[in-house]
Image (cartoon, rainbow, N blue to C red; front, side):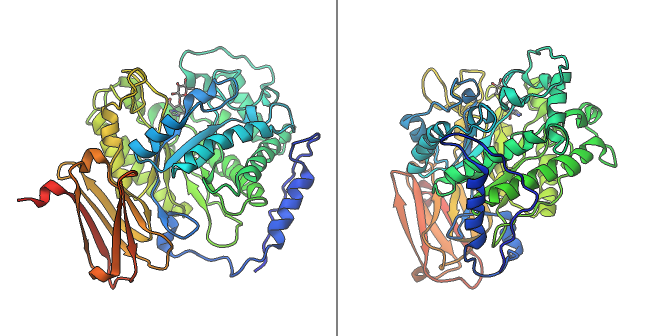
Length: 511
Ligand code: IDC
């Protein structure tokens, strides 16, 4: 097949040592362009579109956490994590996924100067997590455009607010509606206007990240932009009434005309240097969780082989946050599930909830948490909880800063799940009352390595009983890794129909 290079990409020329230049990027693009790619562009089997796969073709079910909000205000924009944090995340909680925050202002402090030392420091974190078996997704985070306005994101030189007024609000997200912030976003989105350089810089920054991490075995992929805010396309009426206009209004216009094409240009730019990383894209700020649909058009992935794009919207209950109570009438979760399912089918991508979370002390927090993780299992969908930042009694993290101990949230978040499936899962679930975990799959013995199921010690402390139905005993073998609390099953024969793996607590086996 012929590898088609993305068109219309302007890469910026940077000067000086240690920086990415247009020539470098072109050289990389050439390498990709001339690589011997076997086979044609495959249309993946329908079922595969809903899964993130590793390079062996195994399905990855991602359970994880965002690391960390505190990096936003760290002078070097780094997550200050060490071996004990990684131990907590990877071993105690059995997570196989971290959404690691990175920031454009640290990456490109001056126009065209891409700070390789920053990427080296990010790489140290990635190394730590990878050594513990955790996949990392790098998230180019922003909240309210830039640090100058309140929070984090763009470098100062990329703030083009045309002198519009700004008055700081105590609620971080309320700052989005300030004229200066609106204008900064409008100028960013106007990719072919006088501020066209902004998106070109942003793309070049991503190209530098992709070049640095494309060969890192622990980096699963990249989250192109955290919660893209529509600027003056933000539909205030939709946000307030939680009703979307029939024609989609300004939200549809933003998604179709600005956000979708922006993502497509970024995807094309990154693919010129990295054809394997999974590219995660989010819905616009204010969409999911607020009862509004996303109108993103289907994006295309110019890589050879099956697409590696992931729809990564966030899930928060605005009501719960406003009232501090998860009311029985709150329909956030079922509405989110139905809308994301429909959108993912149209986008033809897997879904990973890149952020979801709540203050664990909120009334009904446990029920909300349980409903989200059960919905995710039902959808065979991955997630990253917001966030790891240690917290006190009113915080969001599943552990306590003062004691270092887990809080009640952890008991719900840390649950049995199939970390890796060598074959195609058709359903999995965990019932907390009976403590029975069930995985239904079509095993594929051709995929290297085992199916891995995390079995938390808190759930199966007395041991477990494994049963495999639908395949003769000589068709599989199992092994238990106590240090990782991981049950591995290796398939040596295909099954005629589906296979059901059931794990029950050992106590249940004794009459
Ligand atoms: C929040 C942090 C908070 C911080 C704020 C602004 O929890 O301490 O002051 O960001 O930087 C998001 C954002 C995510 C938010 C999170 C919780 O992506 O950055 O973190 N949230 O409010 N969208 C919806 C919720």
